[in-house]
Image (cartoon, rainbow, N blue to C red; front, side):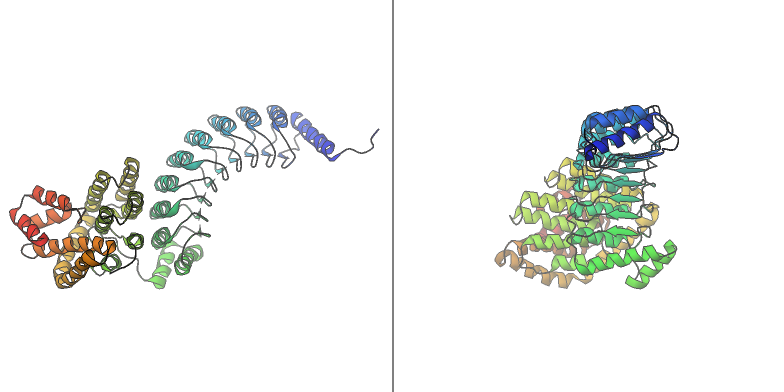
Amino acid sequence: MRLFKSKAEKVKAEIDKIIGRIASNDLTLTEVVLNGRGLGDDEAVRIAAALRVNSHVTKLYLDVNNIGDAGATSLAGMLSVNSTITVLTLGNNNIGDVGSTALAGMLSVNFTITQLHLWDNKIGHVGATAFGKALRTNSAITRLSLHDNNIGDVGSTALAGMLSVNSTITLLTLGNNKIGHVGATAFGKALRTNSAITELYLDNNNIGDAGATSLAGMLSVNFTITQLHLDDNKIGHVGATAFGKALRTNSAITRLSLYDNNIDADLSTRIDKLVEINKNSTSSDEARRRKTELLGPPPATTAGASANLESRFYAKLMEEDDRNVNFKLSELIPLIEDAHDAVFFYTLLNFSYKSGGITAPDRSRYAFDGLCVASVTTSCTASIVLFKLLLEKASNDGALTAAAKFELDREAEVTHTSHAPFVQELRERIRSNAARIDGLEANAEALSRSVEKLRAGIRHQGRVQAAVGMAGAVLNAVSLGIMGPMLSAAVNATIGSIVDFGDVIHLQAVVAAVGDASVKEALDAGLA
């Protein structure tokens, strides 16, 4: 006869003892901790059966075991009748879609459990979608951990949609879940109206600049979220610049984690300083004052075109550049400040594609990224109208898919709705447009010199100069041919309807629609 028990036998004896105490409803046992004990489905089923008659255990920790769908389903059945347990942890097990769907279904009848942790399992988009559906009506869960699963864009989009109506979840972890810009954009939209969540983890995914830009835009209207974790997400200069701009007015974020991305040191330091100001300020007014002292007043959002033709966007657009056009397009995106900038950006983009400078996939990617930046500037009626015209043109050209067009349109609508009143914005557009006309006339001679250089580029210097040259030539024709001789309602109607200055057929169609003969003659003369 053996005098000593093996380690496995000791563990089994300990588990049997704890299950016995649960079944006997031991009033001194309020927390059950069985992490890393090698539990399988059989043990999970036994624990679930014991907890059906228990009224004292409030926390159940079952992390790092081997519980699968059968065990999870049994625990879900128990929680449908148990009204005592408030915390359940099942991280690092083998729970798949079946078990997670059962646990999600439990949430439609259980309003006691407040924390559910299912990190590092085998939950896919099916299970995540089930949680998204259940949590639309559950008002008890405050913390949900789903990181290190395989949720993807489909599952994350379902969870994001849930956040647009859920008002209790304060923490959601979705790190390492193969989430791309589609899922991140869905969160950017949903969190514009959510006033409950304070911590969101999307680290170790693939949201890129497009997803980051959407999340940054959300920060302009959401002042509840305090922590946003986006480490290792392929975020570059465009996305980081969007966060830098958002943090000028957002004083709620006290932790923005952007480690292991492709952000230059100076921009990263600026973002860190802005977050530090938020963290150490006692009020939003103090935070804004300190940011102004550090960086000057935040740039004003204009309703129409940029009044200053020497803006960074315009300077970059007209800059001679012998590099591949991809570099110019990438550098222009973060400089977009309004819908009119987006129009000139799309003009260059589309002409670059037509002249063979970029591929169709590149055009689609740049179009989405550029318009994603522009979508958070549609604060007034005039800007959103122009933005929608541009969306329609890009869609008709094949540069945007129907899904991408819908996403961008929704983003612009949310931005527009959140920036009332509209009358003040319309007045700003009139002022900006007047300044734009004055600026174009004052800079006509300089534009002419630039156009000559760019036209020479079309003939001698390759695709990049050709693309920029076409945009500049048409812009010069419009400014000199139309605006010089007459400043009329026809001019405003023409300029306001053009969304691709590089598409001659589009230009002619717009002028024909206006129906002013002198405008047509001026355009023909300028393009001759």
